[in-house]
Amino acid sequence: MERGAGAKLLLLLWATCSRCAQPDGPSGYTSVIEVTNGGPWGEWAWPEMCPVGFFASGFSIKVEPPQGIPGDDTALNGIRLHCARGNAQRNTHVVESQSGRWGTWSEPLWCPGGGFLVAFSLRVEIPATPGDNTAANNVRFRCSDGTELEGPGLSWGEFGDWSDACPKGSCGLQTKIESPRGLRDDTALNDVRLFCCHS
Image (cartoon, rainbow, N blue to C red):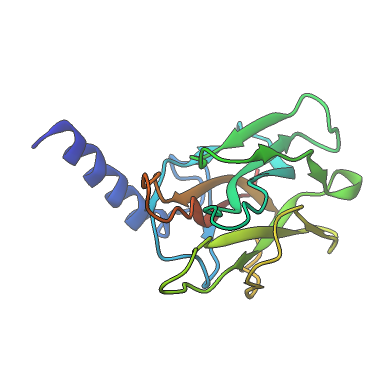
């Protein structure tokens, strides 16, 4: 088996088994939360996890602004989780799965009072054929105290249902990214899943 094919097989097996995680397993997470309206394009990249004992208390996003006509819009290109220990927003650790190449990163938005990100919802544009598809355009998170934080993304598409909630907080993420397609339509970030930890 070629090295590239082997790596893809391992990633596929990991993604298939990620839903089967057990508490205190070797991965350190207890469950995976997802939404049902993610875009259809791209491949799941590698997961990135907060350090042990850290939870995601804030996030930032990478967004390409509208490109006008005849530009190719990609909108949301990446999500970063800002992991903290306790209620301090210092000594944080940033985790980022794969991101698209376009756009710039926003300033972090934080849960108040040292809370954690526990659930999320994606704004996704329905595929249009023909048309300039963008897939995911924005994300919002719910904090452990019920506060909702919406990223400074674009307004195309609609927010879908909220994911299930982590019992304590999220501790990692994995993104689904469409690679650059040259002169064809690019969408960049299509979907994301979060990992829940308990300690």
